[in-house]
Amino acid sequence: MNRVVVRPLIGLVLVLSGVIWAAPVQASPTYRVGLQAGHWRSSELPDELGTLRGSTGTAAAGIREWEVNLDIAQRTATYLQQAGVTVDLLPATVPPNYLADAFVAVHADGSANTRLSGFKAATQWRDWSAGLALIEALRAEYGRATGLRWDAEHISSGMRGYYAMSSRRFTHTISTYTPAAILEMGYLTNPHDRRLMTQEADRLAQSISTGILGFLRSKPAAGWPAPPPLPDLRAIVHTTTANLRAGPGTNFGIVRVVGRNRILLISEVRGDWLKLYSYRRRRDRWIHRDVVRLERISEEPPQDS
Ligand SMILES: [Zn+2]
Image 1: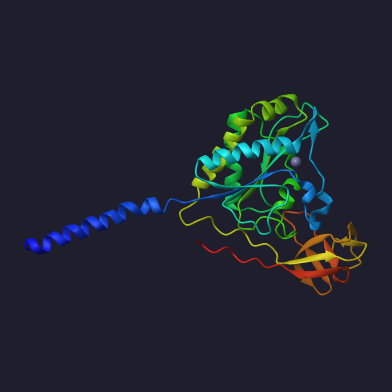
Image 2: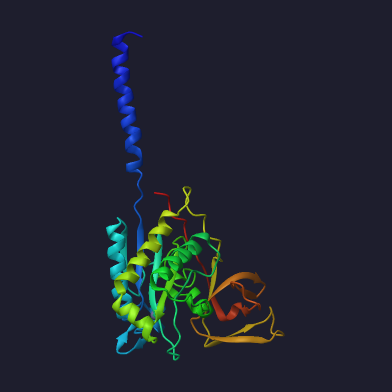
């Protein structure tokens, strides 16, 4: 090889190595996180969530839950933004089909038993590794920072079925593809928990932020697996009341009575009878198709960007 050829080659190698060096910097991911301050601006909730309008959550010692939620959500947002994360600070109303790398709804609990203390977090009604990883990350960091007990026995169906995560029932919810958690930071009715949330809000916010960042960084290189499939058929009750029965026929006993506009997810159609979808429910429930209006739900998977 003579010198005339070698020089351009060295130049090419330098250019290529520059490209290789630059690549990881350009590929540094930017994340979007939705932080919802529970009950904040709940008077603005849309009609489909009208029953929740004006709910300000629990209250104790002159402190209202939504104020505590908003304060800690704002502080958490600041920490995440400092780490380069794009944050949407969300009120009670979530934009329709909200898509993000994580969604965390921040709440505080209340109980008539003022000795009850502890925190908990729940994800949607299904087994999706992304949601479970988010819960675990929050549990570890928040638990370490606060020393609070993990209050597992009070994780309710109301938490798992949280309206903002119920994309099959309502429009103003997160996308099925958004890993999500509702975090109950402690009991506002308990003096110790309340002191943490009001006097040490910054430490709490920092731990929530650290938990979320840990979750974001744990995302597998190929992305999270798709969430498990949910039914794509829903029924809306159009009569004043409707009976839910134990089987597909009037010869089966009535299990429950529901009211007008109730939204039910359907997993099976058998003649005139519709079977309700449920997540680990022990007993089947059926409804007659004459008392409902049926709707198809469609949700396109998000495009990779
Ligand atoms: Zn709440």
